[in-house]
Amino acid sequence: MSIKKDWMERQIEAISNTFAAILLGKDKVKSILEMDEEDNTATQMEDDILERMTKKYLSEKNFNEAENLIFNAIEKEKTVRRFELALNFFNELHQFSDEFLSKYNYSSKEIEEGVNYLKKLYD
Figure 1 (spheres, rainbow, N blue to C red):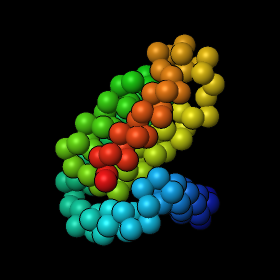
Figure 2: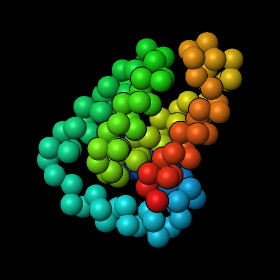
Figure 3: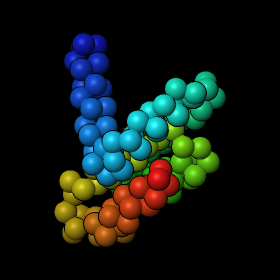
């Protein structure tokens, strides 16, 4: 089971890095990754909490609250993990139909705006 989990995590990381390279450009991704090497334990714990809270809000279909939580954390401190979390969040939302998103007071336009804002924050 652990091998499958490790493999899946590497696949998600590879997909996130590819998406980031497309979105931001290869050189920007490289600088973000270098920035994360300086990450400290307190920030790692905050990122763990952020990930758990985001998953909780997603399971509750509270998309706006999850997005606010992610961007507040990124505005406080930019880390690779927060960037990946945001990409995964928007990727997951992108799987839903407009009707489904609308039911929970969200839209595909907000996904696009969120990705553009993410790009702006990491430029």
